Image 1 (tube, rainbow, N blue to C red):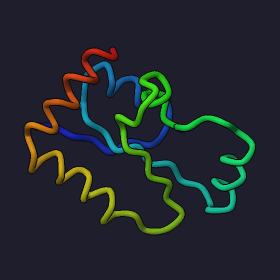
Image 2 (cartoon, rainbow, N blue to C red; image 1 turned 90 degrees about the vertical axis):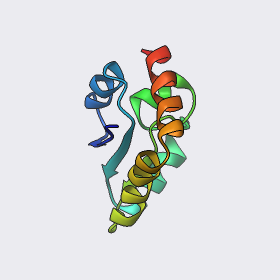
Image 3 (cartoon, helix red, strand yellow; image 1 turned 180 degrees about the vertical axis):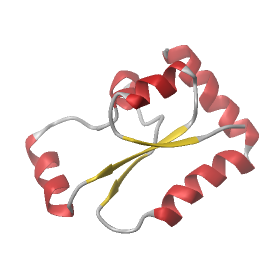
Image 4 (tube, rainbow, N blue to C red; image 1 turned 45 degrees about the horizontal axis):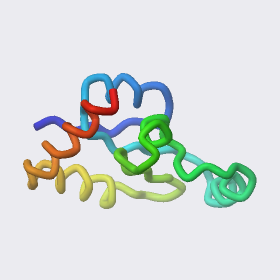
Length: 95
């Protein structure tokens, strides 16, 4: 199976169109992320998650090295084909 890592933005809609399990990363300082969360009252930052109303694409803010966390999510999908297939089904329904 295929999985992706992408920056937050419209590329997530392209990956949704292809029903690709994706980890969404966005780069910002910790204080900037805290400030945005205080001022903007949305639960998710990813367009796909906003459309779904739930976290289909894990969102990982990167103000420090998060490679282990990103790799863990990707390997989780690759090691569990049933979980990955269930996510692909949910993405297919959403698109």
